Image 1 (cartoon, one colour):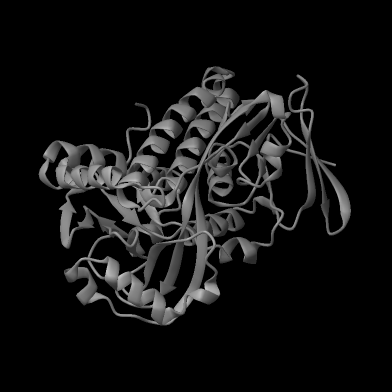
Image 2: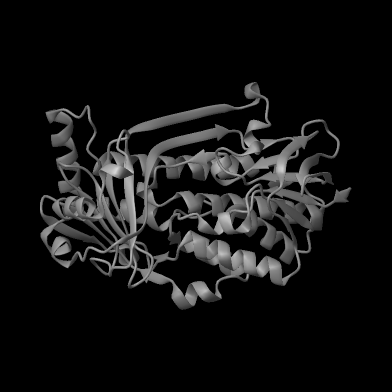
Length: 394
């Protein structure tokens, strides 16, 4: 039988970051992860970090490689009607920017820091079950390790195990509300060793569908096109993908495109999802366990990081000052930021994608909104403020 102060379910970036912040504050924690460490590191995910996320990684002491290898971007491009408009994020927001650094690399840095500190992470923990988190007593977690039953007693549980994880599914269905919107298309993404088409990300709106040219480094690109949910990867050869992407880009971006063999190719559906509240007795949800955003606004990882910041603050205050004020306000603080990010991600998705049921009136409204964005400093400022991340304590 083991005991700890905080049991963290999930060794993705949110669980690892929470564990790192708590450990640096002297709060003992154990992480349980159902997958192997190799599987966790093999996940290809987002890589656009808000300044607040970079600051939090610095606070956690894991930002050295990020600063060496990350690409600081002061703007983005939006392509529409054959034109490419630069949105100057930094000058519109008083010097704030975003940094391109892959989620896989953040996970790797956090894993390395945890291993160096000798902290407990149990990978391939099977059959994880959460107990007594709403009983008023101390909760505990049962699981199988190497086929043998284990029990972990704790003060609190942090559910950082994603949308399909056990944490949210352990809560009584009538104890929370869910809000969801599914989108009638997906993103076909390709990772390839080819230089980016521009110094910064290019978002493209086109009658054939949305496209995005992102990057992982100066020599590796991550590109996406809107596709049908019924599409399969077998329908999309590398040649067909690059040809379709080129058609959806503005002429300048298209001319710079250099097709290359796909290192990874996948189709992801788009969803907006929120579960309220995010606290249930001594169980706290964070990251994708509580909310999902479409990737258009680059908010998923950043929302998980802000959840972790609020939760870490609450737990540190509880153990250092014997106060539960911040813990009691965790759900409300996190959800305020979640809904603002949901709004922005929905707005970006609506602005840049082609919807199957979109009529001529809707199409002209979309064109008018893009035309307004291209011509209005106020509209660009609003987009920039949301893209770089609203203040964590707004």
